[in-house]
View (cartoon, rainbow, N blue to C red):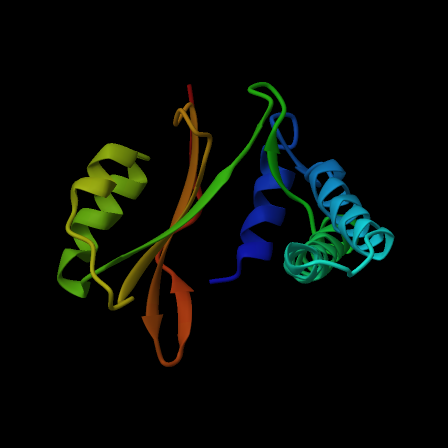
Length: 167
């Protein structure tokens, strides 16, 4: 089960509706900037007083964490792979991996071939990934793309092709 191949197939088959897009990098940049501001504020305070030492330690800790988290997320947003984005509904697709028991494989295949998300979710889930379904959908389920995989011989093998339902 390769999410990248699934997404590439989704882009090529439904390129008029779904495209690869990166998320906005403003939020990580703001977190990074806030961390830098906390570190600058720490250096501006003098250390005389009981409560000032506690404030300075808090500013160093919170500022350092914010700088590291903001920097990592900013680099992931800038240099990482994009995510599926639905052009018409103007939202990113949500990814789910749902696992089922091998005994329920026929019910899973029926639900996937009908591209019925509600029927798929009504089948009992298992923690063992004998049959796994990769699902990409919009938050309101107006667009659903899914493909079932079977875990056999140390790899995931597709049980059928990708099925897509558009509202």
